[in-house]
Amino acid sequence: MSPKPLLRTLTAAAAACSLGLTSGFAYADLFAISNSGTQISGAEIKDVFTGEKQVAGSTKLIPVDNGAVQEAFLSTALKMDSARYKTIWTKKSFREGMNAPAMKSGDTEVLDFVRKTPGAVGYVSSQPSGVNIIQKY
Image (cartoon, rainbow, N blue to C red; front, side, top):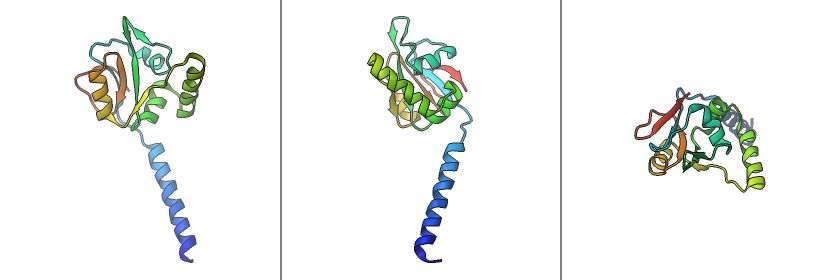
């Protein structure tokens, strides 16, 4: 086999393995969290992340997505895939002028944001401290 077809075959195999590993990887635990001054229930998580619940008491809720574990959270907590989630927020953007949750790169950024921001609600893949744990998945 010449080098070019071999390189294409190896590249395709590596891509297939990479896709299989990332899409099939399951996290042992996911924690829905909120700022220590924000009280919501586990039953309200889906409504918060789909824009249906925007206020808790007198506090405006600010959901934040975790890019490192978003797929796992969407399938586990919200029972949907990323395409459905994006569609929901696209419609809300046009119909209601709402913005999708901000995306943070991982647990550290989400925890920092939630700790500092009244009304913030997020999710992480490791046992957090300094925040309310709303639900463990």
